[in-house]
Amino acid sequence: MNYIINGYKPEAMFRFFEDICSIPHGSGNEDKIACYIESFALERGLYCYRDSYNNVFIRRPATHGYEKRPAVLLQGHTDMVCEKNDDTVHDFEKDGLKLYIDGDYLRARGTTLGGDDGVAIALMLSVLDDETLISPELECLFTSGEEIGLTGADNFDYGQITARSMINLDGESEGVAWVSCAGGIHTKIRCNCDRIPLKNKTLRIRVTGLAGGHSGTDIDKNRANAIKIMSRILLNLYDFEPFNLLSITGGNKSNAIPRECEAYLSVLDPEIAIRNILLSESAIKAELSEDDASFKVHVDKARKEGGMMTYKSTANLLSLITLAPNGVLTMSPSINTLVESSANLGMISSDESEVMLAFMNRSSVESIMDYICLRFEQLAKVTRSDITHSSRYPGWTYNSNSRLQKIYSDTYRRLFGNKTPVISAVHAGLECGVIKNKIENIDIISVGPEINNIHTPDEVLNLKSFERFRLLIIEMLNQI
Ligand SMILES: [Zn+2]
Image (cartoon, rainbow, N blue to C red; front, side, top):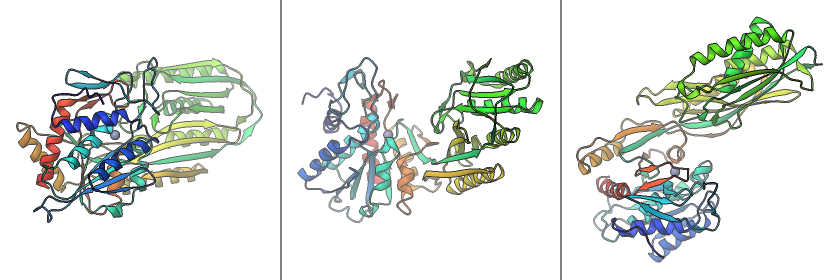
């Protein structure tokens, strides 16, 4: 193999990284990378366990004299997000990445680099491989399917693990450690609607131009939800003069803030209704943030087949949408500016008999998540709707007594000119949340080197930062 990264230490880690980039390893396609890691362990006579999910676990015994020290678990994921530019020819099933150096940065031509989380694999292999390294017993867990719902971490047999300290290597900013993440749950509400034959004039309303975003990490950015805006416009109109709703459609994923919504309704006097709708538009526009500057409400007279909902069903549905929890629900009492829990009405659709609403709810505190579920169930009860929750995964609650946090901060300061690292949290799902809930009393921290533009073809890894990252991990291993 022709290696292109030169001059960074230790050379072996960067070689491992380039090897990994030459092996296709998109989510769901982790077989080859798991084989590569497994044969690495076998060649070195290390204990290795691989499961049917392509998770791989390797154990390295303590250095002589370190047997009494507690074992440490290092963990990262083997799958990468496969994204490429439209004009790039690349088969993620078969082709290796085409790497190139750009100053101190590494990139892949026209594709994602998989620094997320290839750096974890390369670092763990280099540590396992380093015969000069003095350390307690090391356990290294390489998980699959992180990017598609944390499936590897969720299904691993944690009976393999003895460590009660874990360093997750899936961070993406140097000098920032994550110490908490949110759990999530999908909630669907189906509201029954009685229909009668269509009469009067029909109008179509469309809400467009909103910024949208990720329902976790963007939920605190004050971006409007197109479905909620639609329900507000409709509620204003209904309050002024009742109408019959025909249909409502908006958003396409429960975990994205919806940018558009469309509704058809039957009104007694279209001209008066349009005036009322446009009044709502200008009031709402004045309230929105810069991100939503392109917000627009379009109203036109349009025909649509099928019956219309009764006044009663229309009013009931408007209550449901209006009263549904949405956006930031609580902020963390321990970490400034961290969202602790949120809800996102991501999707709405209707057919002849019902209207379906899909939510993605998140919380880093399980008891708050229980309460959010109860709130939704109560809402479903009073609006005579059906409700189902699914795919719940646990959060990772902030632990103010974490020993690892202290070791990380002290080590970071000592190594890097007394700079104080940032202790932070993420309002989205991480493998740490899953693992924290599988292993009792495990202390976890999540760190990484500088990787920018992850999940896009502009992904770039800072090689100097990767060097410092390894140094930090080695020093931490000494302190644990
Ligand atoms: Zn990752």
